[in-house]
Image 1 (cartoon, rainbow, N blue to C red):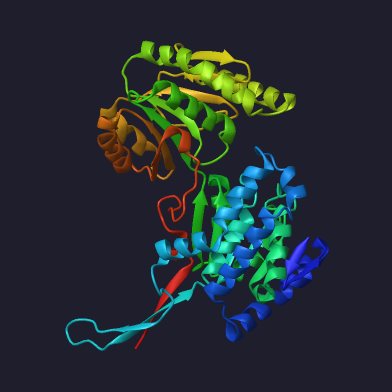
Image 2: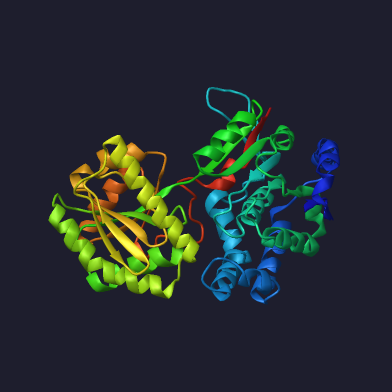
Length: 430
């Protein structure tokens, strides 16, 4: 389905709608503006509808642990208090209020005016339920016109949420276009990109590279690429509590999020210590995955096949690690590796465990610069400041307790930057 100017159309209408969109966008830019307060009021009302159960049927079908958790999280994130705090943190007070300033050296005074970027094309990934609507909300908060390309895995929840948002506040209809265009329909994608001042792309390297191929010269690319999360352990404050929290994080997120733990690093040079850790931690992980069932039988078989294929490929390349050791339990595994590289795991309760002495943190993690996101740090209180500093200087942008790696908090940056600033521009007026 397609949503344009508040009305739903069949996907077969795509060509006709795209052909008239440039004129519609130009008319909106010329005649209309969108205040942040209008958007906040609508989003706050939407959050209340989610909390009241309006979307329960759709939410119940999500591949996540419990509709109630999703609903309670949405109610907090979409609340007026949360959104106003987000605006304050990312843009400061009165960001869109023009002001006049006098440069030094007797230069003429100028007016400084913040403006929306213009039109944003959001190309959403399918690994987070409701992500298209979240990305759209950020575009609306900064006053932009938004074209949303839904991921093929979207199950209709995003379109239902966006439609409801427009029903709450019809003034938003001129600022929202939603398409279910397949990613391989490059001519249509290019037509959308040609109308955009900025392209917001969520996804991995392949998705970002594909967008770069058809993005018009001069369009601002705003990339939210896939990132890697990991745990770093250098002793404990409360071993049992901390290992249990890490295991529950791994199991509950299925390791599908950028903030999920893919590799567990130990502050050690010893392979024996690595193996001892795996033996200690595996029962915690097995207990956690039993509480958060992972894939179906077919999914589990696919993971097994992937691991087997990867092993064969390493043998053929001559890079198979003779001393890599697998520690397996029901529905999960830990692989103790000889190398220290941060890498994506097989997910769904399958995690790498590697050595990373603290003196090697920066040199090792810098090899993954651009991909670093969340580190779940487990250590005694006396080590925390030193290790936090090393991880931050290596390029990590979120440092949390190991059990909180995927917890959101109000006003946090996204991948080390404030997104709302990227969706605006500054106009200087003499």
